[in-house]
Amino acid sequence: MLNRVIRGIAGTFILISLLLAVYVNINWLWFTAFVGVNLLQSSITRWCLMEDILKKFGIKNSGEASCNS
Image 1 (cartoon, rainbow, N blue to C red):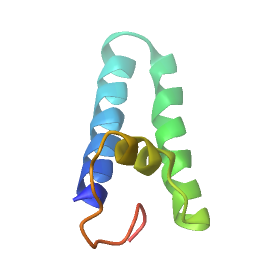
Image 2 (image 1 turned 180 degrees about the horizontal axis):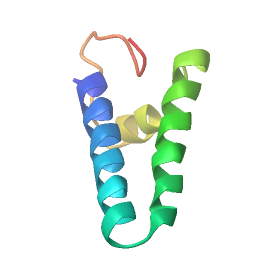
Image 3 (image 1 turned 135 degrees about the horizontal axis):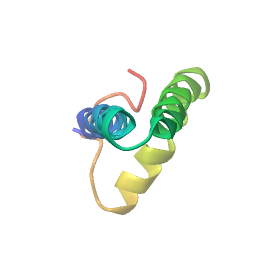
Image 4 (image 1 turned 90 degrees about the horizontal axis):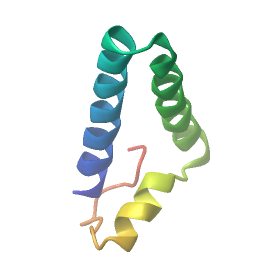
């Protein structure tokens, strides 16, 4: 469950930032890059800030692997 929520949030952030870059300001691509760098970092370090945030909101892992399965 947690892994699916994290992937959904990351995908949503990327799509929203791409739309904002096209229709508002090209500098929104920096947010897209930020999300990508965080995904890459979590795959290397096996630590994911979004996972920690979601756990504080009560979303359980339900036996799945964490952020980078």
